Image (tube, rainbow, N blue to C red):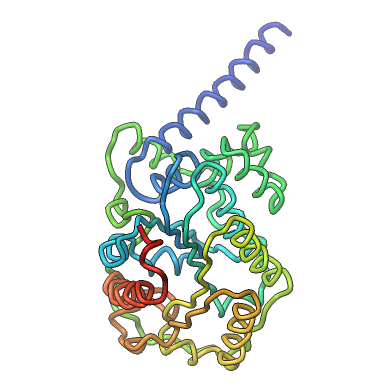
Length: 313
């Protein structure tokens, strides 16, 4: 009886490990979309000379295809949903552990989100197939100490691997792109959703949480240490961000002072000329593909004038 129970337990454990590996390998086999992006960011050796870093606003606002066509660069967008300065810094370190350092790092500072100091890794099960990147594992485990369990223990990770991830895995095994995979290009996630609807305005004050300021400093120091030219930017917001942020001029002035004191540049595009065009926005802080196209074009022209073209390859 004990032998039969032991065999049954061993079979169950082996099956769980096999099923987890089946899911993770299938996810990594995706050749388009967000998981192809994670393959590039965490597993491949890359040599992009310009990186766009930040949250979903970065992911949806900076189009590398258009930027490269104007500047002659070879860029990639490593913006991820919900990335605070702390998470962005850890994403950057994980990327650079496999790939060459960029010449330029463009960090989009979310001025409306700096006061929270959140330590939440959005969509954290998405990262399970990429924990073979040891830097990603160590850095994320500092935020959420379950991550080492997620890597080594399928009893721990599989309950979080929902039907959507199984679907992604099957798409990878069958080499069938997902519904939104074609919206991605070099890490940029375009969207053609309709124009901004009328939303209730919730006025608030914003400020620098101590933790977020520390990790902005970490990004600045990482760039200095590795001779990477850092550019801080605030990308467009509907209404220039003034509809909701009561003290917007003060927070942008603070970031400008941080940039000046560190000898780097800060560009405030939050009040980008067409910032009141509803057809360019899906909400107050995220642009449609047409909005991203207009912004990227303007930013690219500014970038080409702002920096030594000899260093943009």
